[in-house]
Structures are given as structure tokens and as C-alpha cells.
Length: 395
Ligand SMILES: *Cc1c(COP(=O)(O)O)cnc(C)c1O
Image (tube, rainbow, N blue to C red; front, side, top):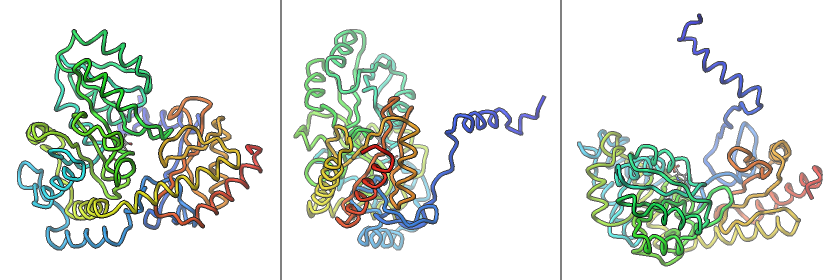
């Protein structure tokens, strides 16, 4: 028998990945995450980040991060419940509550952590969690950590959701409906007004994960709830501080009661050190910038519209996105990866996304246009898309 410490059971699994052709090395970025980057030693136009507003390398955020380090140091030094709750953390929560137009906001170390911690804390045995089938992995994990029952409805299918509500309403105490605000693979927006109506009809709570809606949708990026004018009708409004906001972290906005409970029972807050001051300082600056002006979100939408129109005119299938997420659907998995590789060779980085992340036969490269891209960079990317598209017989 082989020695268990050689991890041969993992070596076998890694070999399986190699046999399936899905073993990979991570691309290495050697610049800030910005429109033009050095990736694996090559200068390319970056169409793959979630840095929607160009904040991750913004001078104002960098300055705020350095100021916060000067004042509070490099690390928080403890979990919030002991002595890691700095004034800057509470300042951020107050600002987020104001920005989101909610009573309170509770911060976590990441968006992932926020789902893992919140869902578990607000549900218990005897409750039911109803989830859209395409919800994010961190929602699935958060749900698994809960003792509540689980049910799934078909993606954005309100008949399917109502069916689940109808058959289960009387069997459970509290029901929590969870949806992504924006679905990241197709860029479609959740049917939140209908979801909220069903929730009210069946006395269920609603939980929206707005990771791709924060900083993108609504007035100056206030999110999906603001986009649909549903303030006060969604119980838990989750945002990430890692995507459009450009730094790291997550939060849930809602009532003061929610805040008080999470403050006592959210496990990532009880058992994991709070966000570093530099991150918090930079986030405060980012939210302040969004509250000052809509210029960043305006530019994002303008660039996204410009890029989508150009690709569409060339004859690419850009799907049914309602947000700056721009999928270019190629179909066949091998062809999709080949397309992505050829774009890279020609100086444009867009990662290919294939089964099992998306359904078989719907392989796509997913373009993420940002507010920071210049029209010249977008024109150059379109030129390369046309070149490679023609070369591969896609156009
Ligand atoms: C990215 C994402 C997260 C995780 O957010 P992080 O801040 O990167 O941890 C959670 N939910 C959804 C829907 C996401 O897209």
C-alpha cells in the first residue's frame, strides 16, 4: 500500500483532470488590474475583470488606503467581537447604509463570506430556503451550512417559484427566497418585482445577492433593489466590495434588527479577523465617489453599449445581457477555448467559459467592459474580434 502522505489519491484525481484536458495553470498578472495589463509576460487589453468602474487602481482609493494605514496600521489585529472593531469599520457601515438607503449595513471580509455567514445565521431547522437554480456558489455553500430545508426553482421562472411556494408554504415556518441580482454568465437581471410580489403573497422573506449589480445598476450603482425602486420590500440586500467597488469585502444591507442579530451570530465576524484598515479606507473613498457623482456608472454603461453595438453589428451573438456583462456565444467548447486563445495571441484577454460552468453547447467568451477603457482600446478589441472571428469562420 502506498503511503497516504504521498497524496496519491489526489495525484490520481489531478491526472484525471489532465486526461480530460481541463488541468490548467493560473494566468499571472504583473500590473494593477486595469484596461491594459501585462499578463503572462504579454501586454494585452483586459476584458475579463470585475473592476467595472476602474476603481481598483484609482489614485483616490490608493491615497485613502495609505491614509488608513497611517492611522490604523496594516491589520485589524482581532475579530470584531474582541478588539478588531475599529471606528473605520463602523464608519463604513454607516456610509453603506446611507448609500443603499437602508436602516443598516453589516460588513464581512468578502462577498463569499457574507453569503456563508448570513444565510446560516438567519435560518434554522423548520425554515425553507428557495434558491434560483443559477445562484452563485457562495449562496449554495451558505445554504448547505444552514439547517433549513432547501428547494430550487427554474432560472428566473416565476411559475416554478410560485409552484415551490404553494406546495411548501404550510410545511415550514419562515421561507427565504434567494436570488442573484445579476446573473454573471449571461448578464440578465433577476425578475425582482415579481419575486417580491410572490414573496409578499406567500409571506416569504427575500434575499438578493447583488455582487454584479453593486456599483453597476441603480442610481450611481446602488444596485438592483434601487434599479427597480423596491426599497423597503427586500429584506436582505447583499453587495460585494470586491467587484465594481474595486477592493475586497462584502456586506448585507437591511434592517437594524438584522444588524443586531448578525452582530451576535454571523460566524465569519465572530471567528475571523475583520477587514484590514487599508481596504476599509479605500472602500469608503469609493462609496463617497459614487455618492458624489454618477460619472463613473454613466461611463461604464456608455462603454458597454458602445462595445455591444459594435460586436452585434459584426454579427457576433452577444446573447440577452441587460448589463455591461457581454457574452460572445461561440457554442462548441473546443472552438470557444480556441477563440479565446487566438484573441490572446492578438493582444486581447477574454477568458473562455464552457461546460460545466455554462450549459453544453453554449461556450462563450465573457467580455467585461469597464468605465476605465478608452474608446480606442475598445475599437482595438473589436478589430481583433473581427480578425479572429473571420479567421475561424465564426463570422
Ligand atoms: C463574486 C460573487 C460573490 C463573491 O464575492 P467576493 O467579494 O468576490 O467574495 C458572491 N456572489 C456573487 C453572485 C458573485 O458574483
